Length: 556
Image (cartoon, rainbow, N blue to C red; front, side):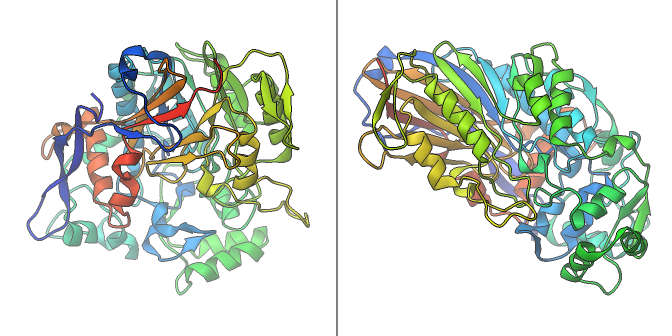
């Protein structure tokens, strides 16, 4: 049921002479033992005692692919917005994100326990970018899937209307997008079919538009906050530039299919930065559009809305607020502490920078809060000056969670009008953690790839920590992880991380009516073949996949 048993890779070519490859079943991946921070002791397997076991999901990117605020039309152009490539504006599998999340939930439920220790999962956790386009319906759909309700990706309901059901005569954008349905009457296939070999699937639009009854997680689940949960396109603050365009279009019946005639991307973005409300509406009127079914549920959500929706939807397994509290709502914060298991504390941080930019950092108030939380679970730690402080408190292991990782933690963008940023970047953040030896693991996402990094203690006084970065649900390889922390009984801990695939290649249907499982598997196959992505980079090396990470136990 995990990649220890079997894995998935690109297999045979679907059509001779075209690069599209079908999914294939491969052998499982072994566990790679990493001793970067501590040597592995002999016979530790027989002494192991599991301390905690959980499932990590991240970058779910549930998408209302019919929403005007999704800005799918930008995929047809080259370039980027604030460092985010325009190829991210749309993927061929955008209509399938609810199916993928439901399939992953079902797989986690079927696994049920840590594959190494056998300890039943204590919880599941998502580390942000739950919604893709800051649309209220997208976030509601995420919560509905995790809680086991009936839902659909499309806020307006009914048949999908967007850029993947256009006909060849509807505009210049046709070739830029995969149209799953067969063309009629000898019309030209789109470029995705002609050049790449993407398949034709009759009945796809009807199948993908139908609401699905989701299973819901069979365990408590927690949630985190990512840049796509606060910034338009994951990079632009509300009310600024292109965000004003998306907010103006979000709940309406006009879906852009391209830029105004004769205008390039940078000129368009420049116009949006300077346009007043009247000029903005005039610019919108020059854009080629499709008429779609509108929905008020596509209204952009705020951080407070994000917290409130979690508080309102406890679901059958809880917990109340899924980590968030009424204090978070009142203070408009998105960080909290929770008890993972006896003797193991989890701390969820909000690493987003509301001032703009895809990458993250930490604000001073949150850093001060974090310091107090860490002090409360240490009997001994180092002060800022490097002296030892004793508290008399009970030692507990600490696992940190947030959206951004150490390679994407240096976005110090200032708020408008500020002359200097006081935000905390990667080096200072890691220096803070190094003062607290009970912090053994940092779990995150954001980069849509699998990585595992070690952070040795620089001064030799500490023990270092491990960092686990997990791939997204939208881009290949669409995986999650099981994570287990075990006490080896020899003054060391082992952290086991094992990759999970959400679907099986055998579920894909090449003909006939599609179903919930076949659509989820098809999403993975479409993602594998996206020409904009580097598959090896996204997947990671063997030492980033199924691993045992050794670390010194920080207390007796």
